[in-house]
Length: 314
Length: 314
Image 1 (cartoon, helix red, strand yellow):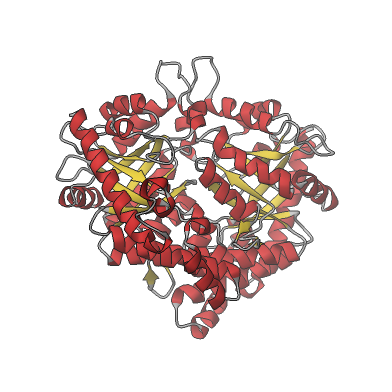
Image 2 (image 1 turned 90 degrees about the vertical axis):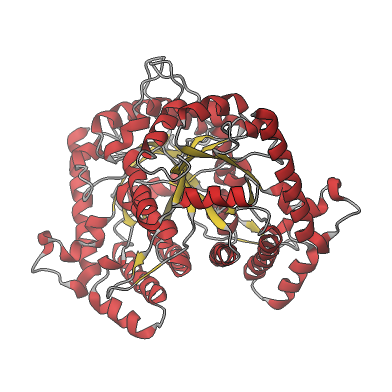
Protein backbone atom coordinates (compact mmCIF):
# COMPACT_ATOMS: atom_id res chain seq x y z
CA UNK A 1 0.00 0.00 0.00
CA UNK A 2 1.47 3.32 -1.10
CA UNK A 3 0.84 5.34 2.06
CA UNK A 4 2.57 2.76 4.26
CA UNK A 5 5.57 2.63 1.94
CA UNK A 6 5.72 6.42 2.06
CA UNK A 7 5.45 6.60 5.86
CA UNK A 8 7.97 3.79 6.33
CA UNK A 9 10.38 5.72 4.12
CA UNK A 10 9.76 8.92 6.08
CA UNK A 11 10.42 7.13 9.39
CA UNK A 12 13.45 5.26 8.10
CA UNK A 13 15.06 8.38 6.65
CA UNK A 14 13.76 10.60 9.48
CA UNK A 15 12.67 12.98 6.73
CA UNK A 16 9.15 14.10 5.81
CA UNK A 17 10.32 15.96 2.73
CA UNK A 18 10.66 15.06 -0.93
CA UNK A 19 12.53 16.53 -3.87
CA UNK A 20 10.56 17.80 -6.84
CA UNK A 21 12.11 17.10 -10.24
CA UNK A 22 10.96 20.20 -12.12
CA UNK A 23 14.11 20.41 -14.19
CA UNK A 24 14.27 23.19 -16.74
CA UNK A 25 17.20 22.99 -19.15
CA UNK A 26 18.39 26.25 -17.62
CA UNK A 27 18.97 24.49 -14.25
CA UNK A 28 21.47 22.07 -15.80
CA UNK A 29 25.14 23.09 -15.57
CA UNK A 30 26.60 24.30 -18.85
CA UNK A 31 29.20 21.54 -19.09
CA UNK A 32 26.46 18.88 -19.20
CA UNK A 33 24.36 20.85 -21.66
CA UNK A 34 27.33 21.45 -23.96
CA UNK A 35 28.34 17.79 -23.95
CA UNK A 36 24.87 16.64 -25.01
CA UNK A 37 24.54 19.44 -27.53
CA UNK A 38 27.71 18.12 -29.18
CA UNK A 39 26.39 14.53 -29.12
CA UNK A 40 22.89 15.05 -30.54
CA UNK A 41 21.91 16.90 -33.70
CA UNK A 42 18.33 17.42 -32.48
CA UNK A 43 18.45 20.15 -29.80
CA UNK A 44 15.29 18.78 -28.10
CA UNK A 45 16.96 15.36 -27.81
CA UNK A 46 20.13 17.01 -26.47
CA UNK A 47 18.07 18.95 -23.93
CA UNK A 48 16.22 15.83 -22.76
CA UNK A 49 19.45 13.85 -22.43
CA UNK A 50 21.07 16.66 -20.44
CA UNK A 51 18.04 16.82 -18.16
CA UNK A 52 18.12 13.06 -17.67
CA UNK A 53 21.78 13.14 -16.69
CA UNK A 54 21.02 15.94 -14.26
CA UNK A 55 17.97 14.17 -12.79
CA UNK A 56 19.94 10.93 -12.42
CA UNK A 57 22.65 12.85 -10.54
CA UNK A 58 20.06 14.39 -8.22
CA UNK A 59 18.39 11.01 -7.63
CA UNK A 60 21.68 9.33 -6.78
CA UNK A 61 22.61 12.17 -4.43
CA UNK A 62 19.36 12.23 -2.46
CA UNK A 63 18.40 8.54 -2.53
CA UNK A 64 19.38 8.00 1.11
CA UNK A 65 18.08 11.40 2.22
CA UNK A 66 14.45 11.53 1.01
CA UNK A 67 11.74 8.87 0.74
CA UNK A 68 10.43 10.03 -2.63
CA UNK A 69 10.87 12.31 -5.62
CA UNK A 70 8.12 14.22 -7.37
CA UNK A 71 8.77 14.70 -11.09
CA UNK A 72 6.56 17.40 -12.59
CA UNK A 73 5.15 16.31 -15.96
CA UNK A 74 4.97 19.82 -17.40
CA UNK A 75 8.76 20.16 -17.41
CA UNK A 76 9.12 16.95 -19.38
CA UNK A 77 6.31 17.62 -21.85
CA UNK A 78 8.01 20.96 -22.48
CA UNK A 79 10.72 19.05 -24.37
CA UNK A 80 8.25 17.09 -26.47
CA UNK A 81 8.51 13.35 -27.11
CA UNK A 82 12.16 13.30 -26.01
CA UNK A 83 11.12 15.00 -22.78
CA UNK A 84 8.46 12.38 -22.10
CA UNK A 85 10.99 9.65 -22.75
CA UNK A 86 13.24 11.40 -20.22
CA UNK A 87 10.31 11.32 -17.78
CA UNK A 88 9.90 7.55 -18.21
CA UNK A 89 13.63 7.02 -17.65
CA UNK A 90 13.65 9.37 -14.66
CA UNK A 91 10.80 7.42 -13.04
CA UNK A 92 12.55 4.11 -13.68
CA UNK A 93 15.86 5.42 -12.35
CA UNK A 94 14.30 6.72 -9.13
CA UNK A 95 12.47 3.46 -8.48
CA UNK A 96 15.62 1.41 -9.20
CA UNK A 97 17.38 3.47 -6.55
CA UNK A 98 14.68 2.69 -4.00
CA UNK A 99 12.82 5.99 -4.14
CA UNK A 100 9.06 6.32 -4.40
CA UNK A 101 7.86 8.38 -7.35
CA UNK A 102 4.96 10.82 -7.11
CA UNK A 103 4.07 11.90 -10.65
CA UNK A 104 2.92 15.50 -10.43
CA UNK A 105 0.51 15.35 -13.35
CA UNK A 106 -2.67 16.99 -12.01
CA UNK A 107 -4.60 14.87 -14.51
CA UNK A 108 -8.36 14.99 -14.66
CA UNK A 109 -11.09 13.87 -17.02
CA UNK A 110 -14.43 12.09 -17.22
CA UNK A 111 -14.73 8.41 -16.27
CA UNK A 112 -13.50 6.47 -19.29
CA UNK A 113 -10.75 8.98 -20.06
CA UNK A 114 -9.73 9.23 -16.40
CA UNK A 115 -9.36 5.45 -16.57
CA UNK A 116 -6.85 5.86 -19.41
CA UNK A 117 -4.77 8.30 -17.32
CA UNK A 118 -5.04 6.00 -14.29
CA UNK A 119 -3.84 3.06 -16.35
CA UNK A 120 -1.01 5.08 -17.90
CA UNK A 121 0.46 6.25 -14.57
CA UNK A 122 -0.82 3.87 -11.91
CA UNK A 123 -1.78 0.70 -13.73
CA UNK A 124 -1.24 -1.20 -16.92
CA UNK A 125 -2.20 -0.83 -20.56
CA UNK A 126 -3.91 -3.59 -22.51
CA UNK A 127 -1.89 -4.17 -25.68
CA UNK A 128 -3.98 -6.85 -27.37
CA UNK A 129 -3.51 -10.61 -27.46
CA UNK A 130 -3.72 -10.73 -23.68
CA UNK A 131 -0.52 -8.69 -23.37
CA UNK A 132 -0.20 -5.67 -21.13
CA UNK A 133 2.55 -3.28 -20.07
CA UNK A 134 3.08 -0.46 -17.64
CA UNK A 135 3.32 2.83 -19.51
CA UNK A 136 4.91 5.05 -16.84
CA UNK A 137 4.42 3.15 -13.56
CA UNK A 138 4.73 5.80 -10.87
CA UNK A 139 3.90 5.03 -7.24
CA UNK A 140 1.43 7.87 -6.86
CA UNK A 141 0.15 10.87 -8.79
CA UNK A 142 -1.58 14.19 -8.29
CA UNK A 143 -5.09 14.71 -9.70
CA UNK A 144 -7.50 17.64 -10.01
CA UNK A 145 -10.98 17.17 -8.49
CA UNK A 146 -13.01 19.66 -10.58
CA UNK A 147 -14.87 16.87 -12.44
CA UNK A 148 -16.14 15.15 -9.30
CA UNK A 149 -16.17 11.58 -8.05
CA UNK A 150 -16.59 9.68 -11.31
CA UNK A 151 -13.41 11.30 -12.62
CA UNK A 152 -11.57 10.12 -9.48
CA UNK A 153 -13.02 6.60 -9.26
CA UNK A 154 -10.72 5.03 -11.91
CA UNK A 155 -7.66 6.32 -10.02
CA UNK A 156 -8.99 4.88 -6.73
CA UNK A 157 -9.54 1.56 -8.45
CA UNK A 158 -5.90 1.42 -9.55
CA UNK A 159 -4.71 2.52 -6.10
CA UNK A 160 -6.47 -0.54 -4.72
CA UNK A 161 -5.45 -2.93 -7.47
CA UNK A 162 -1.80 -1.94 -7.81
CA UNK A 163 -1.01 -0.54 -4.35
CA UNK A 164 -0.66 2.99 -5.68
CA UNK A 165 -1.46 6.40 -4.20
CA UNK A 166 -3.21 9.62 -5.09
CA UNK A 167 -2.92 13.25 -4.01
CA UNK A 168 -6.00 15.30 -4.85
CA UNK A 169 -5.67 19.09 -5.22
CA UNK A 170 -7.47 20.76 -2.33
CA UNK A 171 -5.77 24.11 -1.66
CA UNK A 172 -2.94 24.95 -4.03
CA UNK A 173 0.09 27.09 -3.24
CA UNK A 174 -0.28 29.81 -5.89
CA UNK A 175 -1.41 33.40 -5.22
CA UNK A 176 -4.76 33.09 -7.04
CA UNK A 177 -5.64 29.65 -5.63
CA UNK A 178 -8.42 31.32 -3.67
CA UNK A 179 -10.24 32.53 -6.76
CA UNK A 180 -12.29 29.34 -6.90
CA UNK A 181 -11.01 27.27 -3.98
CA UNK A 182 -11.91 29.90 -1.36
CA UNK A 183 -15.39 30.71 -2.66
CA UNK A 184 -17.90 30.64 0.16
CA UNK A 185 -20.73 28.18 -0.23
CA UNK A 186 -24.31 28.68 0.87
CA UNK A 187 -23.69 26.47 3.91
CA UNK A 188 -20.79 28.64 5.07
CA UNK A 189 -18.07 26.24 3.92
CA UNK A 190 -15.31 27.16 1.52
CA UNK A 191 -15.08 25.18 -1.71
CA UNK A 192 -11.70 23.72 -0.67
CA UNK A 193 -13.17 22.54 2.65
CA UNK A 194 -15.93 20.74 0.79
CA UNK A 195 -13.35 19.17 -1.52
CA UNK A 196 -11.33 18.13 1.53
CA UNK A 197 -14.31 16.38 3.07
CA UNK A 198 -14.83 14.33 -0.07
CA UNK A 199 -11.14 13.53 -0.42
CA UNK A 200 -11.17 12.24 3.14
CA UNK A 201 -14.25 10.13 2.39
CA UNK A 202 -12.49 8.62 -0.64
CA UNK A 203 -9.85 7.37 1.78
CA UNK A 204 -12.41 5.50 3.87
CA UNK A 205 -11.57 1.82 3.88
CA UNK A 206 -8.21 2.59 2.29
CA UNK A 207 -6.19 3.23 5.46
CA UNK A 208 -2.94 1.48 6.15
CA UNK A 209 -1.20 0.57 9.36
CA UNK A 210 -0.68 4.16 10.49
CA UNK A 211 -4.35 5.11 10.04
CA UNK A 212 -3.63 7.18 6.92
CA UNK A 213 -5.04 6.39 3.50
CA UNK A 214 -3.42 6.17 0.07
CA UNK A 215 -5.79 8.96 -1.00
CA UNK A 216 -3.99 12.15 0.00
CA UNK A 217 -4.47 15.86 -0.52
CA UNK A 218 -2.38 18.72 -1.88
CA UNK A 219 -2.31 21.72 0.47
CA UNK A 220 0.17 24.54 -0.23
CA UNK A 221 2.78 25.61 2.35
CA UNK A 222 1.88 29.20 1.52
CA UNK A 223 -1.46 28.90 3.37
CA UNK A 224 -0.62 27.74 6.94
CA UNK A 225 -3.95 28.82 8.46
CA UNK A 226 -5.91 26.79 5.96
CA UNK A 227 -3.48 23.89 6.35
CA UNK A 228 -4.14 23.83 10.08
CA UNK A 229 -7.90 23.68 9.54
CA UNK A 230 -7.53 21.11 6.77
CA UNK A 231 -5.39 18.82 8.93
CA UNK A 232 -8.54 18.43 11.09
CA UNK A 233 -10.92 17.78 8.18
CA UNK A 234 -8.47 15.40 6.52
CA UNK A 235 -8.44 12.68 9.13
CA UNK A 236 -7.24 9.96 6.80
CA UNK A 237 -5.60 11.87 3.96
CA UNK A 238 -1.84 12.28 3.87
CA UNK A 239 -1.03 15.84 2.86
CA UNK A 240 1.45 16.72 0.14
CA UNK A 241 2.74 20.24 0.78
CA UNK A 242 4.17 22.09 -2.22
CA UNK A 243 5.34 25.67 -2.24
CA UNK A 244 8.18 25.32 0.25
CA UNK A 245 11.40 27.17 -0.52
CA UNK A 246 11.50 29.03 -3.81
CA UNK A 247 7.72 29.59 -3.78
CA UNK A 248 7.87 31.37 -0.43
CA UNK A 249 6.31 28.81 1.92
CA UNK A 250 8.12 28.63 5.28
CA UNK A 251 8.90 25.52 7.33
CA UNK A 252 6.46 26.83 9.93
CA UNK A 253 3.81 27.13 7.22
CA UNK A 254 4.45 23.57 6.14
CA UNK A 255 4.46 22.34 9.74
CA UNK A 256 0.77 23.21 10.07
CA UNK A 257 -0.07 20.21 7.87
CA UNK A 258 1.48 17.67 10.27
CA UNK A 259 -0.22 15.83 13.10
CA UNK A 260 1.01 15.76 16.73
CA UNK A 261 3.16 12.70 16.13
CA UNK A 262 5.05 14.35 13.28
CA UNK A 263 3.28 12.35 10.56
CA UNK A 264 0.43 13.27 8.21
CA UNK A 265 2.33 15.35 5.70
CA UNK A 266 5.24 15.38 3.30
CA UNK A 267 6.80 18.62 2.10
CA UNK A 268 8.12 19.17 -1.42
CA UNK A 269 10.83 21.52 -2.57
CA UNK A 270 11.98 21.60 -6.15
CA UNK A 271 13.83 24.64 -7.41
CA UNK A 272 15.72 25.35 -4.16
CA UNK A 273 17.23 21.84 -4.28
CA UNK A 274 17.77 21.59 -8.05
CA UNK A 275 19.48 24.97 -8.31
CA UNK A 276 21.32 24.84 -4.96
CA UNK A 277 24.60 24.73 -6.91
CA UNK A 278 24.10 28.34 -7.96
CA UNK A 279 22.36 29.63 -4.84
CA UNK A 280 24.18 32.23 -2.76
CA UNK A 281 23.71 30.05 0.32
CA UNK A 282 26.22 27.56 -1.09
CA UNK A 283 28.47 30.02 -2.89
CA UNK A 284 32.16 29.23 -2.57
CA UNK A 285 31.34 25.70 -1.39
CA UNK A 286 29.84 24.21 -4.53
CA UNK A 287 30.32 25.03 -8.18
CA UNK A 288 28.41 23.80 -11.20
CA UNK A 289 30.24 20.47 -11.31
CA UNK A 290 28.99 19.82 -7.76
CA UNK A 291 25.28 20.26 -8.57
CA UNK A 292 24.44 16.86 -7.05
CA UNK A 293 26.38 17.45 -3.85
CA UNK A 294 24.84 20.89 -3.55
CA UNK A 295 21.36 19.37 -3.99
CA UNK A 296 22.15 16.80 -1.29
CA UNK A 297 23.33 19.52 1.09
CA UNK A 298 20.19 21.56 0.41
CA UNK A 299 17.95 18.50 0.86
CA UNK A 300 19.64 17.80 4.21
CA UNK A 301 19.20 21.43 5.20
CA UNK A 302 15.50 21.24 4.29
CA UNK A 303 15.13 18.02 6.30
CA UNK A 304 16.62 19.64 9.35
CA UNK A 305 14.58 22.83 8.96
CA UNK A 306 11.29 20.96 8.60
CA UNK A 307 12.02 18.53 11.41
CA UNK A 308 12.85 21.55 13.57
CA UNK A 309 9.57 23.23 12.69
CA UNK A 310 7.55 20.08 13.34
CA UNK A 311 9.25 19.64 16.70
CA UNK A 312 8.47 23.24 17.55
CA UNK A 313 4.90 22.64 16.42
CA UNK A 314 4.09 19.51 18.40
CA UNK B 1 -6.40 34.26 -34.27
CA UNK B 2 -7.64 30.79 -33.35
CA UNK B 3 -11.33 31.57 -32.90
CA UNK B 4 -11.58 33.20 -36.33
CA UNK B 5 -9.83 30.27 -37.99
CA UNK B 6 -12.26 27.94 -36.21
CA UNK B 7 -15.34 29.93 -37.20
CA UNK B 8 -14.12 30.33 -40.78
CA UNK B 9 -13.70 26.56 -40.93
CA UNK B 10 -17.17 26.00 -39.50
CA UNK B 11 -18.71 28.35 -42.06
CA UNK B 12 -16.70 26.98 -44.98
CA UNK B 13 -17.56 23.37 -44.16
CA UNK B 14 -21.07 24.26 -42.97
CA UNK B 15 -20.30 22.09 -39.96
CA UNK B 16 -20.08 23.11 -36.28
CA UNK B 17 -18.83 19.68 -35.21
CA UNK B 18 -15.41 18.17 -34.69
CA UNK B 19 -14.11 14.62 -34.39
CA UNK B 20 -12.43 13.55 -31.18
CA UNK B 21 -9.40 11.31 -31.58
CA UNK B 22 -9.75 9.17 -28.45
CA UNK B 23 -8.41 6.06 -30.12
CA UNK B 24 -8.10 2.99 -27.96
CA UNK B 25 -6.23 0.09 -29.54
CA UNK B 26 -9.49 -1.83 -29.34
CA UNK B 27 -11.10 0.58 -31.85
CA UNK B 28 -8.52 -0.26 -34.52
CA UNK B 29 -9.53 -3.01 -36.98
CA UNK B 30 -7.76 -6.31 -36.38
CA UNK B 31 -6.01 -6.34 -39.76
CA UNK B 32 -4.15 -3.11 -38.91
CA UNK B 33 -3.30 -4.28 -35.40
CA UNK B 34 -2.01 -7.62 -36.65
CA UNK B 35 0.16 -6.02 -39.32
CA UNK B 36 1.89 -3.73 -36.82
CA UNK B 37 2.19 -6.52 -34.24
CA UNK B 38 4.14 -8.48 -36.86
CA UNK B 39 6.36 -5.48 -37.67
CA UNK B 40 7.35 -4.38 -34.16
CA UNK B 41 8.76 -6.51 -31.36
CA UNK B 42 7.65 -4.00 -28.69
CA UNK B 43 3.86 -4.37 -28.31
CA UNK B 44 3.51 -0.76 -27.09
CA UNK B 45 5.27 0.45 -30.25
CA UNK B 46 3.06 -1.81 -32.38
CA UNK B 47 -0.04 -0.43 -30.63
CA UNK B 48 1.06 3.18 -31.15
CA UNK B 49 1.84 2.56 -34.84
CA UNK B 50 -1.54 0.88 -35.36
CA UNK B 51 -3.28 3.81 -33.67
CA UNK B 52 -1.37 6.30 -35.82
CA UNK B 53 -2.37 4.50 -39.02
CA UNK B 54 -5.98 4.50 -37.81
CA UNK B 55 -5.89 8.19 -36.82
CA UNK B 56 -4.31 9.12 -40.15
CA UNK B 57 -7.11 7.27 -41.94
CA UNK B 58 -9.74 9.10 -39.92
CA UNK B 59 -8.05 12.47 -40.52
CA UNK B 60 -7.86 11.91 -44.27
CA UNK B 61 -11.51 10.80 -44.36
CA UNK B 62 -12.94 13.77 -42.45
CA UNK B 63 -10.58 16.55 -43.55
CA UNK B 64 -13.15 18.11 -45.85
CA UNK B 65 -16.05 17.44 -43.47
CA UNK B 66 -14.99 18.97 -40.13
CA UNK B 67 -13.01 22.10 -39.25
CA UNK B 68 -10.98 20.47 -36.47
CA UNK B 69 -10.06 17.31 -34.64
CA UNK B 70 -9.69 16.95 -30.88
CA UNK B 71 -7.07 14.37 -29.87
CA UNK B 72 -7.44 13.33 -26.23
CA UNK B 73 -4.03 13.14 -24.53
CA UNK B 74 -5.04 10.38 -22.09
CA UNK B 75 -5.44 7.87 -24.91
CA UNK B 76 -1.94 8.59 -26.16
CA UNK B 77 -0.23 8.63 -22.75
CA UNK B 78 -1.88 5.26 -22.17
CA UNK B 79 0.62 3.80 -24.65
CA UNK B 80 3.62 5.42 -22.97
CA UNK B 81 6.39 7.20 -24.85
CA UNK B 82 5.37 5.55 -28.14
CA UNK B 83 1.84 6.81 -27.56
CA UNK B 84 3.05 10.37 -27.02
CA UNK B 85 5.11 10.12 -30.21
CA UNK B 86 1.92 8.99 -31.95
CA UNK B 87 0.19 12.08 -30.52
CA UNK B 88 2.86 14.37 -31.96
CA UNK B 89 2.54 12.70 -35.38
CA UNK B 90 -1.26 12.79 -35.21
CA UNK B 91 -1.19 16.54 -34.51
CA UNK B 92 1.24 17.15 -37.36
CA UNK B 93 -0.79 15.00 -39.78
CA UNK B 94 -4.05 16.80 -38.97
CA UNK B 95 -2.46 20.22 -39.41
CA UNK B 96 -0.81 19.18 -42.69
CA UNK B 97 -4.25 18.20 -43.92
CA UNK B 98 -5.64 21.63 -43.09
CA UNK B 99 -7.45 20.70 -39.90
CA UNK B 100 -7.26 22.67 -36.67
CA UNK B 101 -6.12 20.65 -33.66
CA UNK B 102 -7.66 21.08 -30.21
CA UNK B 103 -5.46 19.16 -27.75
CA UNK B 104 -7.79 17.81 -25.08
CA UNK B 105 -5.26 17.88 -22.26
CA UNK B 106 -7.15 19.53 -19.37
CA UNK B 107 -3.79 20.73 -18.08
CA UNK B 108 -3.57 22.89 -14.99
CA UNK B 109 -0.88 24.03 -12.58
CA UNK B 110 0.56 27.04 -10.80
CA UNK B 111 2.08 29.94 -12.75
CA UNK B 112 5.58 28.82 -13.69
CA UNK B 113 4.50 25.22 -14.31
CA UNK B 114 1.41 26.30 -16.23
CA UNK B 115 3.84 28.27 -18.41
CA UNK B 116 5.70 25.04 -19.20
CA UNK B 117 2.45 23.36 -20.31
CA UNK B 118 1.49 26.46 -22.31
CA UNK B 119 4.85 26.47 -24.06
CA UNK B 120 4.68 22.71 -24.72
CA UNK B 121 1.27 22.80 -26.44
CA UNK B 122 0.69 26.39 -27.55
CA UNK B 123 4.12 27.95 -27.79
CA UNK B 124 7.77 27.17 -28.08
CA UNK B 125 10.46 25.68 -25.89
CA UNK B 126 13.78 27.41 -25.25
CA UNK B 127 16.52 24.90 -26.06
CA UNK B 128 19.60 26.93 -25.20
CA UNK B 129 21.96 28.86 -27.45
CA UNK B 130 19.06 30.98 -28.66
CA UNK B 131 17.41 27.95 -30.26
CA UNK B 132 13.79 27.09 -29.73
CA UNK B 133 11.34 24.48 -31.03
CA UNK B 134 7.66 23.68 -30.86
CA UNK B 135 7.11 20.59 -28.73
CA UNK B 136 3.56 19.65 -29.78
CA UNK B 137 2.18 22.76 -31.49
CA UNK B 138 -1.59 22.34 -31.27
CA UNK B 139 -3.96 25.16 -32.28
CA UNK B 140 -5.87 25.17 -29.01
CA UNK B 141 -6.10 23.15 -25.82
CA UNK B 142 -8.44 22.45 -22.94
CA UNK B 143 -7.46 23.57 -19.42
CA UNK B 144 -8.89 23.10 -15.92
CA UNK B 145 -9.62 26.31 -13.94
CA UNK B 146 -9.39 24.97 -10.34
CA UNK B 147 -6.12 26.85 -9.67
CA UNK B 148 -7.46 30.27 -10.62
CA UNK B 149 -6.27 33.08 -12.85
CA UNK B 150 -2.51 32.84 -12.36
CA UNK B 151 -2.66 29.23 -13.61
CA UNK B 152 -4.51 30.43 -16.72
CA UNK B 153 -2.45 33.55 -17.44
CA UNK B 154 0.48 31.74 -19.16
CA UNK B 155 -1.95 30.06 -21.56
CA UNK B 156 -3.60 33.40 -22.36
CA UNK B 157 -0.18 34.87 -23.03
CA UNK B 158 0.58 32.17 -25.59
CA UNK B 159 -2.87 32.54 -27.15
CA UNK B 160 -1.99 36.18 -27.80
CA UNK B 161 1.59 35.60 -28.89
CA UNK B 162 1.06 32.58 -31.14
CA UNK B 163 -2.56 33.01 -32.25
CA UNK B 164 -3.70 29.98 -30.27
CA UNK B 165 -6.92 29.17 -28.40
CA UNK B 166 -8.09 27.85 -25.07
CA UNK B 167 -11.18 26.01 -23.83
CA UNK B 168 -11.61 26.25 -20.06
CA UNK B 169 -13.66 23.56 -18.27
CA UNK B 170 -16.87 25.12 -17.01
CA UNK B 171 -19.54 22.39 -16.86
CA UNK B 172 -18.32 18.94 -17.86
CA UNK B 173 -20.43 16.20 -19.43
CA UNK B 174 -19.97 13.43 -16.83
CA UNK B 175 -22.65 12.29 -14.34
CA UNK B 176 -20.83 13.60 -11.23
CA UNK B 177 -19.80 16.93 -12.77
CA UNK B 178 -22.24 18.62 -10.39
CA UNK B 179 -20.43 17.45 -7.28
CA UNK B 180 -18.26 20.56 -7.25
CA UNK B 181 -19.36 22.50 -10.33
CA UNK B 182 -23.01 22.80 -9.16
CA UNK B 183 -22.28 23.79 -5.56
CA UNK B 184 -24.34 26.81 -4.61
CA UNK B 185 -22.37 29.83 -3.49
CA UNK B 186 -23.35 32.27 -0.79
CA UNK B 187 -24.42 34.79 -3.45
CA UNK B 188 -26.82 32.27 -5.02
CA UNK B 189 -24.60 31.48 -8.00
CA UNK B 190 -23.43 28.01 -8.89
CA UNK B 191 -19.66 27.43 -8.96
CA UNK B 192 -19.78 26.77 -12.72
CA UNK B 193 -21.60 30.07 -13.30
CA UNK B 194 -18.89 31.90 -11.41
CA UNK B 195 -16.22 30.09 -13.44
CA UNK B 196 -18.11 31.03 -16.62
CA UNK B 197 -18.10 34.71 -15.70
CA UNK B 198 -14.35 34.68 -15.24
CA UNK B 199 -13.78 32.72 -18.44
CA UNK B 200 -15.79 35.31 -20.29
CA UNK B 201 -13.73 38.10 -18.69
CA UNK B 202 -10.52 36.40 -19.80
CA UNK B 203 -11.82 36.76 -23.35
CA UNK B 204 -12.19 40.52 -22.99
CA UNK B 205 -9.98 42.24 -25.56
CA UNK B 206 -9.36 38.91 -27.27
CA UNK B 207 -12.36 38.91 -29.62
CA UNK B 208 -12.02 38.31 -33.31
CA UNK B 209 -14.07 39.43 -36.27
CA UNK B 210 -17.20 37.51 -35.21
CA UNK B 211 -17.21 38.94 -31.67
CA UNK B 212 -16.07 35.68 -30.12
CA UNK B 213 -12.80 35.28 -28.23
CA UNK B 214 -10.04 32.68 -28.45
CA UNK B 215 -10.78 31.91 -24.79
CA UNK B 216 -13.60 29.38 -24.93
CA UNK B 217 -15.45 27.16 -22.49
CA UNK B 218 -16.23 23.46 -22.21
CA UNK B 219 -19.93 22.79 -21.54
CA UNK B 220 -21.24 19.22 -21.81
CA UNK B 221 -24.05 18.28 -24.22
CA UNK B 222 -25.56 16.25 -21.40
CA UNK B 223 -26.66 19.41 -19.54
CA UNK B 224 -28.80 21.40 -22.02
CA UNK B 225 -30.51 23.57 -19.36
CA UNK B 226 -27.17 24.71 -18.01
CA UNK B 227 -25.83 25.19 -21.52
CA UNK B 228 -28.71 27.53 -22.31
CA UNK B 229 -28.00 29.64 -19.23
CA UNK B 230 -24.28 29.57 -19.89
CA UNK B 231 -24.69 30.75 -23.48
CA UNK B 232 -26.00 34.00 -21.95
CA UNK B 233 -23.16 34.39 -19.40
CA UNK B 234 -20.53 33.46 -21.98
CA UNK B 235 -20.92 36.44 -24.29
CA UNK B 236 -17.48 36.15 -25.81
CA UNK B 237 -16.49 32.55 -25.16
CA UNK B 238 -16.85 29.95 -27.89
CA UNK B 239 -18.29 26.77 -26.37
CA UNK B 240 -16.80 23.34 -26.95
CA UNK B 241 -19.53 20.76 -26.38
CA UNK B 242 -18.38 17.24 -25.53
CA UNK B 243 -20.61 14.33 -24.63
CA UNK B 244 -22.51 14.08 -27.91
CA UNK B 245 -23.19 10.60 -29.23
CA UNK B 246 -21.75 7.72 -27.22
CA UNK B 247 -21.93 9.70 -23.96
CA UNK B 248 -25.67 10.25 -24.33
CA UNK B 249 -25.84 13.95 -25.22
CA UNK B 250 -28.47 14.70 -27.89
CA UNK B 251 -28.24 17.13 -30.80
CA UNK B 252 -30.98 19.16 -29.09
CA UNK B 253 -28.88 19.21 -25.91
CA UNK B 254 -25.88 20.43 -27.87
CA UNK B 255 -27.98 23.00 -29.75
CA UNK B 256 -28.57 24.90 -26.50
CA UNK B 257 -24.97 26.12 -26.60
CA UNK B 258 -25.40 27.90 -29.96
CA UNK B 259 -26.42 31.50 -30.52
CA UNK B 260 -29.30 32.64 -32.77
CA UNK B 261 -27.07 32.88 -35.82
CA UNK B 262 -25.92 29.27 -35.49
CA UNK B 263 -22.46 30.18 -34.18
CA UNK B 264 -21.01 30.17 -30.66
CA UNK B 265 -20.40 26.46 -30.23
CA UNK B 266 -18.67 23.45 -31.70
CA UNK B 267 -19.79 19.91 -30.86
CA UNK B 268 -17.42 16.99 -30.43
CA UNK B 269 -18.09 13.31 -30.95
CA UNK B 270 -15.36 10.73 -30.59
CA UNK B 271 -16.33 7.14 -30.07
CA UNK B 272 -19.42 7.20 -32.31
CA UNK B 273 -17.25 8.33 -35.25
CA UNK B 274 -14.16 6.24 -34.52
CA UNK B 275 -16.11 3.01 -34.06
CA UNK B 276 -18.76 3.66 -36.71
CA UNK B 277 -17.33 0.72 -38.70
CA UNK B 278 -18.71 -1.69 -36.10
CA UNK B 279 -21.87 0.20 -35.14
CA UNK B 280 -25.20 -1.44 -35.94
CA UNK B 281 -26.26 1.74 -37.76
CA UNK B 282 -23.74 0.99 -40.52
CA UNK B 283 -23.93 -2.79 -40.43
CA UNK B 284 -23.90 -4.39 -43.85
CA UNK B 285 -22.64 -1.16 -45.40
CA UNK B 286 -19.14 -0.93 -43.89
CA UNK B 287 -16.81 -3.59 -42.59
CA UNK B 288 -13.57 -3.22 -40.69
CA UNK B 289 -11.55 -2.38 -43.77
CA UNK B 290 -13.87 0.57 -44.36
CA UNK B 291 -13.32 2.18 -40.93
CA UNK B 292 -12.39 5.52 -42.51
CA UNK B 293 -15.38 5.60 -44.85
CA UNK B 294 -17.65 4.61 -41.97
CA UNK B 295 -16.20 7.45 -39.86
CA UNK B 296 -16.79 9.87 -42.72
CA UNK B 297 -20.39 8.71 -43.08
CA UNK B 298 -20.95 9.07 -39.34
CA UNK B 299 -19.30 12.53 -39.29
CA UNK B 300 -21.61 13.62 -42.14
CA UNK B 301 -24.60 12.19 -40.28
CA UNK B 302 -23.58 14.11 -37.14
CA UNK B 303 -23.17 17.31 -39.17
CA UNK B 304 -26.64 16.98 -40.57
CA UNK B 305 -28.18 16.09 -37.20
CA UNK B 306 -26.59 19.05 -35.43
CA UNK B 307 -27.37 21.51 -38.23
CA UNK B 308 -30.94 20.26 -38.08
CA UNK B 309 -31.12 20.81 -34.33
CA UNK B 310 -29.59 24.30 -34.57
CA UNK B 311 -32.04 25.21 -37.30
CA UNK B 312 -34.90 23.98 -35.15
CA UNK B 313 -33.47 25.94 -32.23
CA UNK B 314 -33.09 29.33 -33.85
